[in-house]
Length: 166
Image (cartoon, one colour):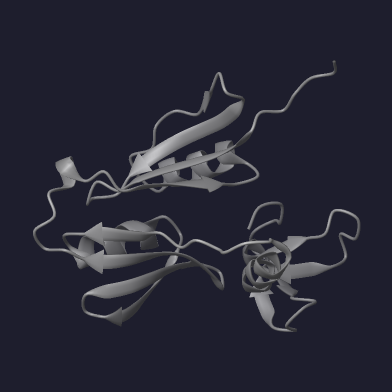
C-alpha cells in the first residue's frame, strides 16, 4: 500500500499478522501503527454507508490476464479455470471472468481506482513493462493515468490534484 518503504516487514495492529511493509499503511496521526490492506478494506466497508463494489472483468485468455496482473505486482488467486480474484496484499480488487469469445478491441469494461500517489503507481507499472499512459493533470482536478490489460479492460488510476493556497 502507499506510504510504506518496501523491503521491510510490519505486524498489522488489527489482525496481528506479519505483513510485507508494502502491504500495510501507517496511520497519519500514529505512524507507529501499521494496518494491512485486508483490514483497511474490511474497516472501510464498515465505515462507508453503502455497498462496496468489486468489478468483474471479462478476459479472453486467463493465462495472459494472470501474467498481466502478476507483473503489475498483484496476486491472482484462481477460483477455477474460468474465474480468478486479483488481490493487493489481502484486499480483493477485482475478479477475472473467462469469456473466450471476447474481442479486446470491442471491450468497454473499465474501472477507476483511487490511489494516494498515481505517479508512483504509474512509474512502478511502467518499470514492470505495462502499457501505461502518461500521468495527466485533468481539468476536473484529478491526477490520472490509465492502462489496458490484454483483454481490453481499461483501468484508470488517480487522485485529487493538490491545490495551492487560496
